[in-house]
Length: 119
Image (cartoon, rainbow, N blue to C red; front, side, top):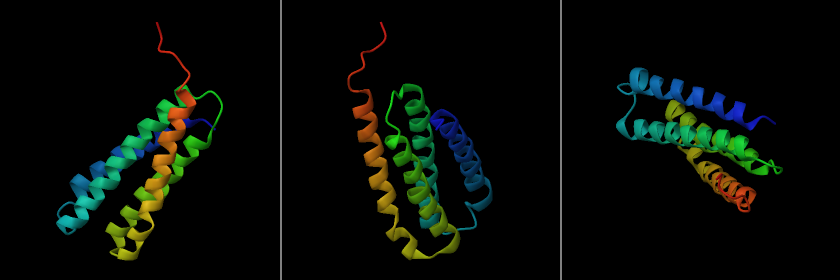
């Protein structure tokens, strides 16, 4: 799996969705829903960068990358869906994405723990 490419594509998607939010939906949704939208966009961008870095640093394990990717799909996807549909039950699955993000970060730390900084 090319995590750097996937992270780059997610970064592109994050910019597109951020711009869409700022220019197309900000005045069309309730302020609380726009805050949810901004949270989803923010976490999408953070984890896009995380995937790029993971792809550059990775030596063997791929499960942290999968955690980041599925975390984006579940966490960000459920929040975007909540904003566009208004179905509040979608917020119930968001924490599962958050747990995947945490697992990804822990896995990333384990993956790189024995590496020394470049000299």
